[in-house]
Length: 518
Image 1 (tube, one colour):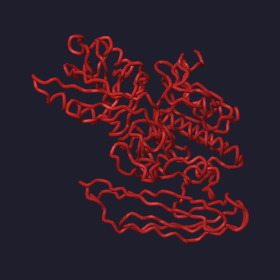
Image 2 (spheres, rainbow, N blue to C red; image 1 turned 90 degrees about the vertical axis):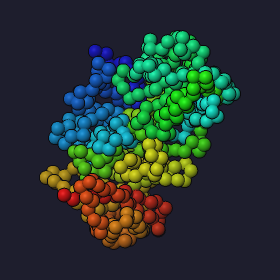
Image 3 (cartoon, rainbow, N blue to C red; image 1 turned 30 degrees about the horizontal axis):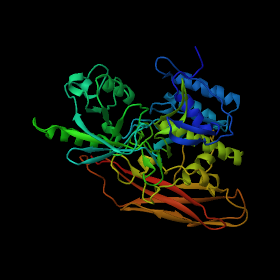
Image 4 (cartoon, rainbow, N blue to C red; image 1 turned 60 degrees about the horizontal axis):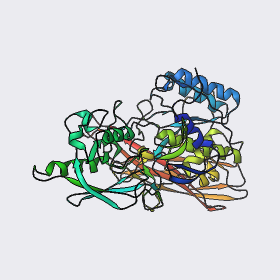
């Protein structure tokens, strides 16, 4: 069987982690510029573990690929492949990853794309660095103006747009069948849609077509333009342009529902109409709030490891431009598969600067320096609720490549023969920031009804690689929730700030769970 990438997924992931810098990269002119990956000078070793049908991935094949990579001497393992949330002794990938850690190989993997549901996480064991997905500050603006003057913002990658309002055109939603709602092949009647804007529903469904396939069906039936309403689970703000050569706009699920209501509100004597504005532009900057936690990014609690806080961090995973293959030079792709190689590449950069650091030290540097505010200086939000994201959504926060190179302190550890547990109450940190005297002072953030006490409150290091320990105690005055209320969760943090010898801030999130009483 061929080792070539017949799908494009692996090529996209690999080029994100360590592809060379390429000028003039774009998708039909969108996001034009220099494509520069995380670790452009790293060497890639590719191992094919997924085969037909449709890229099926068997865990034994994945484990075999991991073991071969370890034997070949890789420094970083990047796994953009799902793994079930089961105890590690039943998980070949988790066992192979533990073997990698024993050999000093850093392992990063996807959180999974089963969000926003809770307990949907992939790669839940603590020795794997698990990466969730976030949006980026790049947008392809477009809008729909209904006949009642309601305006709905969306995205479009139709390059023929000139920014002028086109229309109005008659607007139709063919609800005769589930196929016509989704504009599947052969489902639309030319007598119904010709010359009109057609609203098509996009669903998370194996037999649902992508936007380009929907566009082909609308064009076949003589439709003038298309609006694609996103699937419900993608939240209010999660919009995905598809690779289109047809005038189409993607809007959120909620916007799609309002457009349907408008169509249904028109009487037999009134025709629903809409106009569309497609700019054909790529907008970058804080006109789009970013990062936002992607709705599809999987969340904890883990079923197998409910006491392990995951994902470990977020990285860009929405509309990521990277190499693709199969006749397509570059392609926009979304998923935690796209987020994981960002972290893998950053880990490679850290390894190049600090070649003696253990996988745990690299993971610590990535986590403790992650940030929790967006480009507008507000708390990072969850795209489903548009409320502030919590540690179940984003782990320690969004990865910060520059800060991760100089984290100040790291929590280091290694596999210990016979060691059956890790005590949270006592933690050890290593000074990796500066020579000479370095002093850190603690601050804590507690949820209501919880007291976090840390002793000592100040850590002093006399030289580089000095170690210091501190103890943590948690005391709760909250009542246990009733059975009808279910489990209760809340969040806090422990933050060490360098007050002498540097400016680093070392932040660790803490999650609390109150079990429901019988």
